[in-house]
Amino acid sequence: MTIRSIRHFGLLVLVLLATSMSTGCPSNEITTDASSADASIVDAATQNDQLFDSIGEAPLRRLIERPFFGQMPLNNRFFDPQFSMVTGAGWLQICETCTEGPIRLFLPHTPDEQPLLYLPALSEEKAHCAWGAIKSNAESTDVSIWLGRRAASAQEAQLSGVSATLYLYFQDGTQRAQTLLADSAEPRQVLEDIYWYRVVAEEVTGSIGWSYLYVCDQPAQGLYLAAPRAVAHQESKSGEEDQRLRPPPPRPLTALERNLLKRMEKRKQPVLRSPQPDPS
Image (cartoon, rainbow, N blue to C red):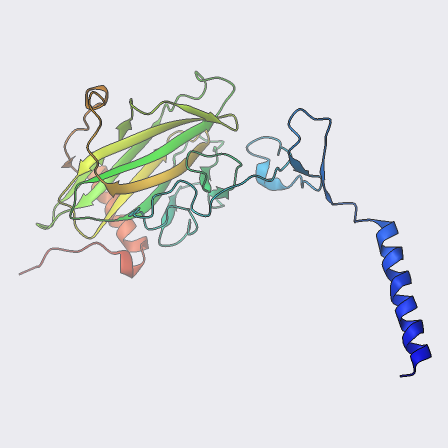
């Protein structure tokens, strides 16, 4: 290549750079509105997809800072606390009339800044439930989850018809149930027009293998699940213990619950099957 051709090539590169700078960025660029009271970054290319049809109009997406694990404890014993396997080993859907699975959502603000699971409302008065796996622990364990409804007021957001039950397996082969109660020491949260309530079962001890959290909305009115936790029990601060309702001890299963567990054993992955008593 001659010196003259090199000069011509360099001139061509400069012309191309000047042209690209003058034409600007594509129309779907991220812009900021300095005149706004909160000049946060707004994505101008918001899509009006079908995901939000059942939960209202999709707001403009905003870029926020979020740690990789949010506020989730690293010693969490839930198999899938981020709801990444909602049709597999971590979580299973239980619904007789559903044609689609539950929806995993990413909202700007949730109780632990992590993805949440949405069980859509059903037209018929049927139940919509979810079943999550927990690795049992020899230590005393606190199990909790945040449950929420999208509503215009706290009265409309009451969790009527919602239940949360922990199913436990013990060394002697028995199966028992532990009911999660509303945590009176944890205030209600309102995030993204969703009213969140925390339910908890404290000091769960003695179970082996896998335990299972069963959350059910009947009739299904649209329920959000967030921040499932199973962590080692921590002693409450002075005076806080008196504010909390002590959960009842594990109880024997009802006939309906025994049938439910038998059905779920057939659906679960082999690696998650709970230990069975020695026939000898």
